[in-house]
Length: 192
Image 1 (cartoon, rainbow, N blue to C red):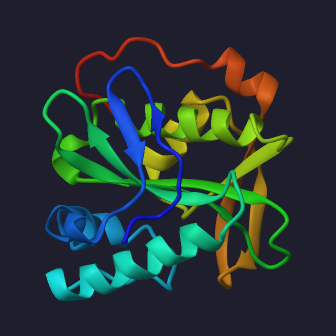
Image 2: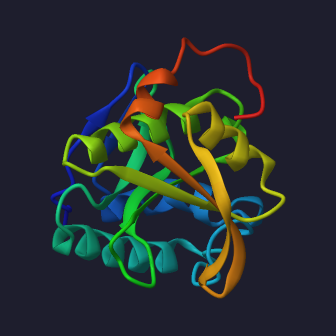
Image 3: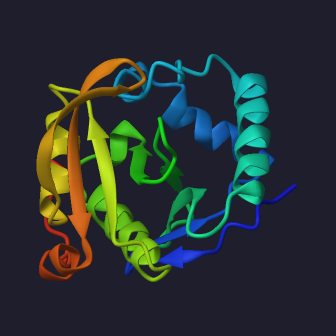
């Protein structure tokens, strides 16, 4: 079972639809408390491969139903084929008219610019489908996510409690802001 999510590429990464057989590698992301602590309250740490398979089946079905540019992607490092994380463009509650860009990476791949590249290619994908803007919602204290969205040209627009009943920082990106913040060649591990 594979989603119809389109494949997207950066200079080092391929974003492709999730596959059920990705479950063991996906668990290296979504089974880690240091990753899931920053996600919505609807997303707990995944306890085992069986639960990860079920979640992937749900994501695959969801991506198949969503109109482009929305979807969920596995993020794969081209150099060695390692699944380094997941990413999404999903409608934001409550009205579902805005798109949220999001990503989650294996902790051992933090600091190499993969989040910045992933966010950049997803925003470009959204803008290529006539979206005027995309948003990121970040939990206060998540310095890595705040840094990544700013590197991609996102601007802080305030805090909101309308997403999942939490006070979250909201960032917005428009096409001109993305173009001005095009990723540069990756350097040594840093904050991203």
